[in-house]
View 1: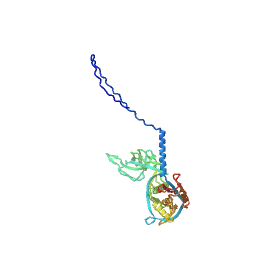
View 2: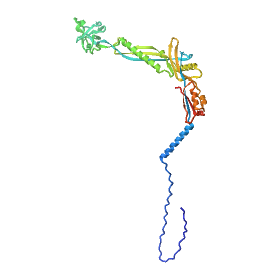
View 3: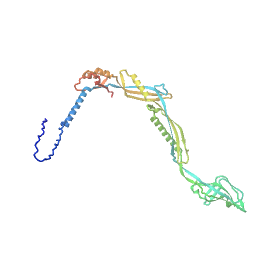
View 4: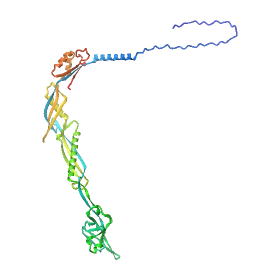
Length: 415
């Protein structure tokens, strides 16, 4: 908008014709200048934006496919199963093709077993009685098995020869001599476990000594017993021995297999086991509820490195096929049986593996580059060593294998 310029001429003075009047000068209020409106950015619809993005991605994919896609040629060669047999000695030194080692283990264990037999257990009560001599100052010898009868009629006998001390006079009165002796009940059973009692000596019956010699117990008779109890039989011992030794042998065999050094093969036929120790805590006939049995087993076996056998098999295959053949290591299968005599162990080996024509893929790729696909297919299908081919050509208008080897992928399938 154009600005106009006006000349401002000051007003001329007019002659004063009246009283003086004060006139207030009006101040001019500046007007607010508004900013010019901003230019609006046109909005693009979201669907149109997505469509543009989609077209862009398609173009990128197409360019990548045209310039970077490869031709892929997959070849499946003819294969056959090769089977070979041979034998090899396992030596315990480094002189043979396969070197063996002795792998050892020992296991020992103590285990408790219950007795299955029964027997009558009888024990006779025993105790101490004090025998008094109120007969004379002379001592009185007693034979072994001298009988003593308690007030309730229980018969006991002395267990050894004894001498009863004589009495002595004090103030004109005979003080009885006394001697402690051990006695045992005439019969077994708990009924002889009697308490304190007075005893007479039947052997003196009918004589003055019968009333002058007597005994007293001041504590109960004990250990009288009569009942059926468990008893260890020979069959118990035999069964315990068989059970524990079989367990030890099994554990030792399992250890040899599971603790085998990595990369080694164990020949189970060579496992030998020896019982080096066995002890029972009790003998047959012992009256007891249980007994223990302790045993030790030593085991050993022949082992060899798996890699030694595999290397032998591979060498045997390579020496049995022509130079233009190869074998597929993934299909290698080795079976063997063992023959053992006093001096050596021999492995009889059967080897199986797939073999196929050796192919130089890089050389073949060079020979096929730049040639029409039809010619390539005819050439490959005409090869006797090829059983099947698949070709992924790339773009539809591609009619021949690319000249650039980087755009040709060749793969050999052995499955």
